[in-house]
Amino acid sequence: MSESINYEIKKTGDITVFKLNEKKFDSSIAGFVKGELTILLHTEDVKKLVFDLSEVDYCDSSGLSAILLAFRILQSNDGHIRLASPTKNVKTLIEISQLDRVLPIRTNVNEAVEELKSI
Image (cartoon, rainbow, N blue to C red; front, side):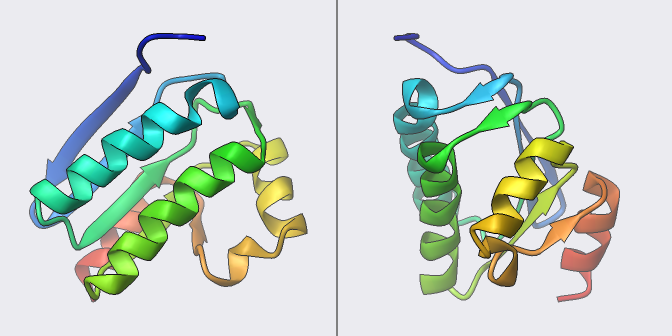
């Protein structure tokens, strides 16, 4: 099990972009991601989050669970989330699980940021 995860956080005004720089988003890192997102969303008072999935080739239910945790935290604080640049495999998983109904998917980070700016 890895001791750390590779990710970047960028702020654009009131919008935070969380980019996961890992090929596999599964149970081996999902707990770390949940922890980082929980800290970020509670201590930084983030209301608008873009989750950049462009580097993730594989995601399982543990990874989706971490994204849903962020969604629930944001929802309870009147916040918003957008998923950006998922690879074909990840996008298919999100659609099969019907999570695209609550987790809006955008083609790229810029599109997601522009949409959140208008909210």
